[in-house]
Amino acid sequence: MDYMEFIRFKANYYGDLVKWLRSDVPYIEETIERWREEAQKWLAKPSPFHQHMAKKRKKAIKTWTVELEQRKKMLETHEKILPAYQAEAERLGVG
Image 1 (cartoon, rainbow, N blue to C red):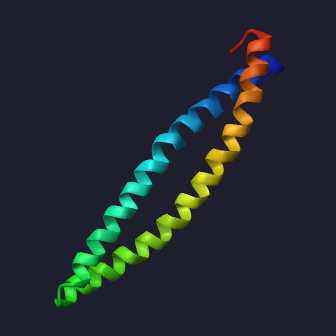
Image 2 (image 1 turned 180 degrees about the horizontal axis):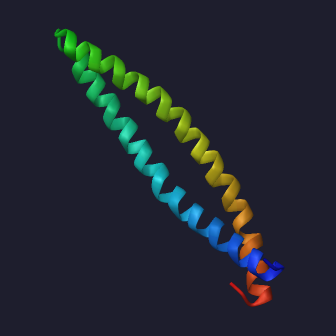
């Protein structure tokens, strides 16, 4: 792979990744919020099943909150990197 192919690959890769993260982050935020509401409804019910499901939902919320923060950081980092590769690809005429 020569330099021009590498730059074109990186520009496309980071472009696709940023596009995906921009759509994924809001979806995860909405899902976490929906799960919080579900957990609150389930906690209000006395049955052991609903209590169990609420605990499982809270565990999933913790896990996905960490994942959301990681994806936000990744998006921020890649949004900074992308313009450099795009500019270099345009300069080389491969972008």
